[in-house]
Length: 186
Length: 158
Ligand code: SF4
Image: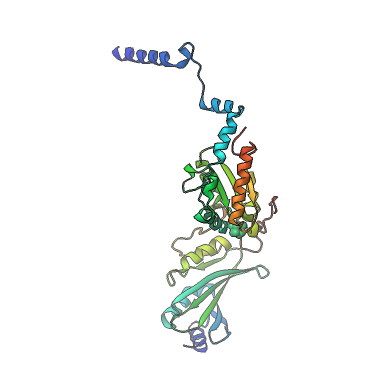
């Protein structure tokens, strides 16, 4: 009998604490807040912040990956645009597909993409990731990668020079500023 | 140990299984071996003729003849002769004894040949896919009649 009483008490407490029952209090969720903000000028400010901290994931996949690493090094000083290489997908905002995507690698790439926290963007770097490049006719290259990932900027070249990659990042910044990017839904 | 001596030695030791011997030069010789005897020949090469390592093992698809050729390049650190051994296999069910017990490094070569051409190596310690994803086993992409090659579906040509 004592146990039953305790349970009833707990239920009552929960009822009393649930916000709907407190008069004058309106409840919301963080998703609702973010949806609301997207329609206000506050989003411009948020995007300004986002575009100036495009941390990219150091995940070299092909020869383009070497150029990507070079871009992240001191010589090109990407830090002045707020672009910093990160080692973990959890801390990154941008994934650069820097090379050929093989059928075997695709599941791992998808997993990395899923591990990144929103908002997140993808750059396709090099001919390989755009169309297959030199490996266009290979039996194990995944083609039409844009059907799998929402790619914002394509950077052609084999490999693109670090300056080209940097230009790609700047184009992405412009897209974010104009709210035209695919990474965040408006 | 020179080219002529090696050829004579293996053809007298295995008169039934060694055929079409050829001396290309002082350092390159080749011979066909019957698929059933390849391990014995390799053992003999290693123990008696100082062929102490396998340089390469590969497969060629001769689709007109309906045959696969399993090619071994066997060489030595002691003498300069490189021997190319070839074994002919049928295309519809290619099977050959694995030579891993003689040359240990054949292990990954044979796994690769298996995934690309579908040659089954009998008594291989661990015969499974090496580089390709597991789903592609059975497609044998380097065979000449492979349908997925060339693959040109990209819409996004630069
Ligand atoms: S586009 Fe060229 S440089 Fe880049 S990964 Fe492909 S082959 Fe290598």
